[in-house]
Amino acid sequence: MEVDVKTAIERFRMFIIYNTCLSLIPKGYLKDTTVFPERDPDKGEIYVEAASKIELAKIRDIKFVKVADVLGVIYRSKTGNTSLKWRQIKGNIGRLTGVASPNSIVNLLEAKVLTREYLEEYLKQRAEAPRTENQETQGTTTASQ
Image (cartoon, rainbow, N blue to C red; front, side, top):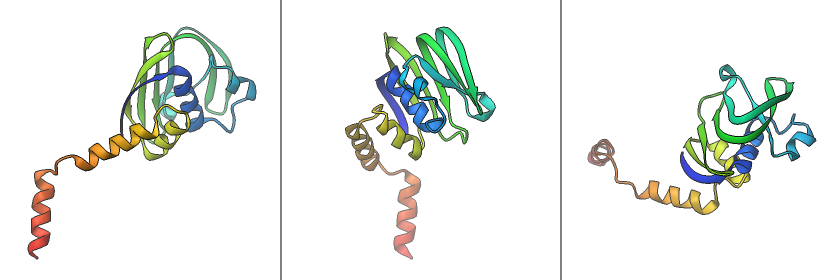
């Protein structure tokens, strides 16, 4: 699913945690909105671009960093089915764009990045989209048999 929404960085941070490290993040890091997970590109990239960044700990393949003034965040799942970028607009609000897998959509809803209304509107637009010429040809071929 294509994603293009404005959201707070804290919500996108929670999505990343839900999608990658909820079972292993220390409780103190979970509560601290300035602590973000990062991961190497070969394992599904998570990268935080910030004015300052301090590495706190590494647990398995996740590195936890304390950041200030987040400018952008890149998230790509291990499978490559989800690829999202958050870019700061003003303060802690930014634009999230990219493609999300069904599992990621569930976590985007859970983190309140996406609303149920946004998802319903997206699905409604997809259902109303005009059929392609190929789909129409296949439909008439099937009907004539």
